[in-house]
Length: 427
Image 1 (cartoon, helix red, strand yellow):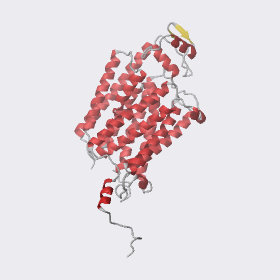
Image 2: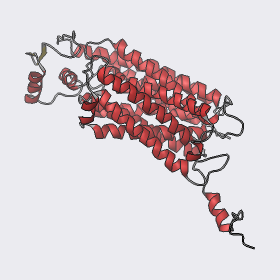
Image 3: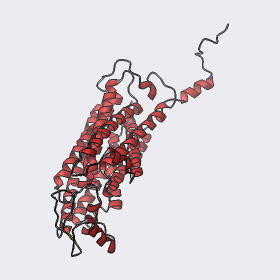
Image 4: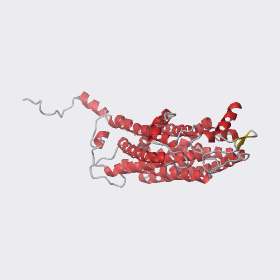
């Protein structure tokens, strides 16, 4: 009998063994989840330092963020077409491309909502870094994220994390927020004291006028740069360094109230606190919004939709900001952005780091609980390291500032260790 037209339903032993091994790669062990969190911690703590460096060199944040958001999306596409397509697709765990055609729009909308609030938060922090500093901005936003987001994730994950360990860690993050605000206030007072001998004219928000350096008045940028070039390079933390930085940077901050920076920072923190719970709902459907029989979104598919909405919001807002800038930034244009290659490579690298960092955070969260995965909010430890090493933050500050800074970091380390210890295992 000719059976050539009938598909074979019998697999040889070697074939069964091969297909048994080939399945979508998912992090399932507690150790694997912690490894993902630690790698995400490094990536998510490094990309803000790169964007801060570009702003301090004078590159417009609108240009930087447009570059960043392109590779941020690229990272999600790479993850979806690699990890999301490994092995055979099954009814319970379909691969990435299969899920694109399924009726899973309620979960897709949750994922896209998470991407929108993350994009708004990242955009806000880009301006907050200039006012508050890299270290304090990251500490405050991360702590708010943990206090609100971790609590939401704990209940969404059906309490798989140990409450008696988790919530003391949340309390430590809350204390870190207060200490972070104290560090900023103390450091701002230190800088004001250093610059007390200088006079400014902030009417246009962009220029420094009649700023005496070394007992000499320099009415414009060229004279100031010439004086600094003749003398030794300004040392970190000195009044000369602060003046030189103000002349170079894209966002002018001297003379502006600290409340502006803190308001932007707290807004970013609220946005960050919502993106992880939204992603949690997208992948686990705790509110039962999917139709019966429709599988949950995989981490990779949810991250793809998450990144799409993040990309769209970032493109729309930053193109608007090119022509209608905020905080007295100069106007630009899309053509000017396309021709601005100064620092573009660094901005593209920052987008990749952030994209892969977010993906690793979600992979770890799906395995050990998204509440525990919020331990990656330890990223200020990495950012503070880069802030001190690259930007000279807190150099030549007062003893009071150093006490607040050390206390903040110690409390932060304690909070992260406690949060990781609360890791559970998703059934």
